[in-house]
Amino acid sequence: MNHKKHRLFTACLLSAVLLAANFPAPAPSVAFAAPPASPLDSHGALRVNGAGLEDCHQKPFQLRGMSTHGIAWFPQYITLETFRTLRDDWNTNCIRLALYTDEYHGYCSGGNQEKLKSLVQKGVGYATELGMYVIIDWHVLNDKDPNVHKEDALEFFREMSSLYKDHENVLYEICNEPNSYATWDSVKRYAQEVIPVIRANDSDAVIIVGTPTWSQDIDQAAASPLEYDNILYALHFYAATHTDWLRERLKACTSQGLPVFVSEFGTCDASGSGNNDFSQAAQWLRLLDSCQISYCCWNLANKAESSSAISPACGKVAGWSEEELSESGRWISQYFRSHP
Image (tube, rainbow, N blue to C red; front, side, top):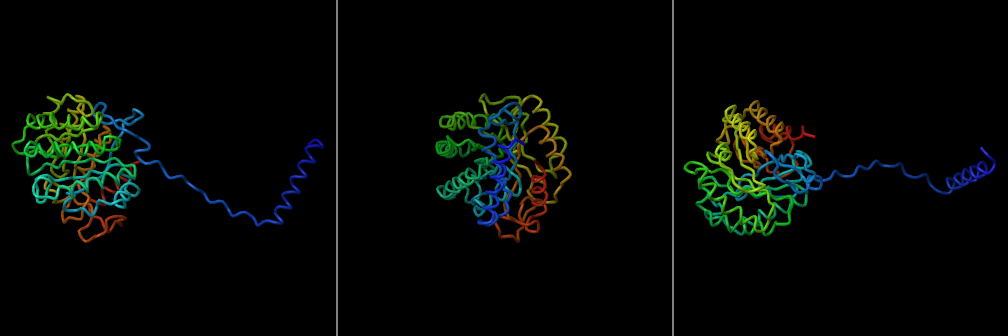
């Protein structure tokens, strides 16, 4: 060391000693980890590409989440803390808001439409605050054919798409489960009227279209798809009822390039109750993960049925312990957590 550097070093050392004598030692440093970016922050606006979704980086992306039960019957789960638990504890990135149309107090059957729309808006608002994706689900079931309440659907989606035209996290599911006499031709006619209403406000919205036989007949959609971009076709399964035969149909349709979204599935039978079949459920989810197909589990409620994720005895709306979940809820929450 030369003399100039030695003198400088000595002066610095003396200063440090004097400072230490007059000031208390600094508090030990505490490790700080920046919070992870939200799903929306990380992946941005989504688009349909091939058989699934891609994010703003043009990389395949899966939505994985929970579907509410009917929000008219279980409005208590539309809260910020509920969705935060699903995001931070369960490791999900999506919530599906199920708005029944024709059931008791449904949107088109005596329900308070303004109150129901307010619940949808709260759900979208909470999901947006947390950076989660959210599906506005027009939950056709008892009406069978979505054309039964088509005029209500047109007005509803006109209003919702006007509100959320600038939201990158909102997807629209325009008919949950066409069934009984509903054919693909009738569903397609309905979609050809509803989709332009949404696109008039939100030109690149991702839209999910249900398929006949409770959203199982995706092969009919594959044979005659809609001529729009950013369309996904709904496939629904219940693990104890729908097994290899429906998985084979999915494989065949995706190999043809049909974009699919499993917007509803359960680990039990198609009634929503009965015994859970976790072996079949695991086969399904492994297939969906391998194909990068998005999915939402039915359902977020404490209803006394197998498909509900929360125990009927539990009145909490967030922060559930394992003991406060149903058998299905424990299984699916653990599955979600197992994903990176």
